[in-house]
Length: 217
Length: 230
Length: 193
Image (tube, rainbow over all chains, first blue to last red; front, side):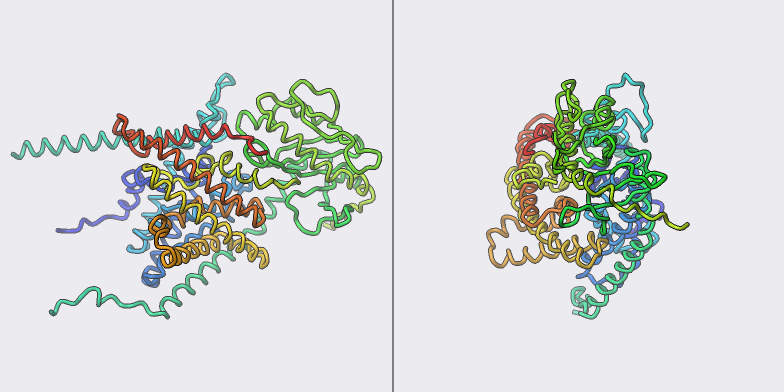
């Protein structure tokens, strides 16, 4: 059986939809729900996580022959924590307001199962180029998911997008969307949509398969 | 059998390899963290100073320079030697005259701690400026304390006079129901955000009871900062 | 400023600012384990245990970090010390009390690098709690987690028997239930002030 040669771009694309961290793998939900009350916060969180994903993946991949099997997890945690600390200080240097808005969740990137999972499952077994593409893909997919949730919550809950008022004064904001409950509901709505699309795809594939079998028989 | 057993083939990791990798990774991480920390420390300090300066300018517009102060063991007002969690400042105008004091204070609101910055005027013996620094109050309800005009009108001159001995506020600052304000030391609350507006009253009362006696006693004799030679 | 009382800290961590329903910490084990009531109870036990350990570790580490003035080492030292301590305790548990290990042990690796534990350590440091306050805070957080988990498990067990559309099954339904629970817990606001 010939191994299909997976190109680097494939590694990137799979993180966007097929293996989307938030909607398909259902990993890293904590920050997805917590910092998505505005679109800007969601994007910033996604960017920070993508940075850590890429840098940690790169480091783990470069060092993969150097780290013995027994010291794997400790080393990965060390590396991830280092980059999270760097991102934490970088955000503080960029904008104190943004740092206050994201709060402790920047530091909580370190326990995001997504990063440790990718390091263990992928970066430790592939060359740096692929590891970076994988990290980038997962990161962009994660950011995209967070952004979608953030947009829904901000538009419905505050009537703004990126701080810009969208509606006239008469708009009654659906405040629950910017509260914790809203995070759960917004994610549930997107997850429903994703599940529905996947079910349609699966049904279509099944029907195509049946037709192919009928044609063959 | 001639087939090599894969388990036996697996090289056992030596202790040296373990130490080498853990120490190596540790050194790499430490180097990275310290470089980033040092590299950003300057900008972070600038950001914090700018944030504070703009907040102070909002509550005490006439201020040109500030000095951070704290209370020493005897309760006397002295220049602060180390950064405090809830700092207070003396504000000086263009000619170096004492314009007022700026105080930070904090207490539990509806959801979490609320931190406020407010200014005290020595001339009026009242609180004249108010700004919420940090709050996690419910958007649209509790956060009205930040923007509701009739609540902010409380701070045109919220009475914070001291008693004859100068040891405490003669009338405790307290929040009353919306529309029920009769005295200048009362805060007209916000219906629908009672817990948050009550909390603001508590914060201002606690903060002022702590700082105002010492400010009234020592601030006028306090040495203003020397203008820096540019 | 007036220090919050112990009861106030406990109620705040357990109900008003419930770790799962208000702070979104510990979502992964929350959704992973809340399908059955029995596993939910055992998971709560493991979480309470790890939270206490982590709280004490965080307090100790913070003393050291402040002494050597190295706040930038906080993240990396917390995560390493907490995960190694929990592993050590797990090994001790296996030796000293096999029944407890059989009941809680399998959950321990799942929750060591979990946002709930790490979040607890970070929040406790940010609030500047003393040792006793930190312990109370950890107990409150664990109680809140247990409450949310048990409530969720109870609802989900019933939901399993209901006629739910396919795309809604599983995580999506659990999310909506969690949202409603979260709204319910908002009613606790202002408690214990």
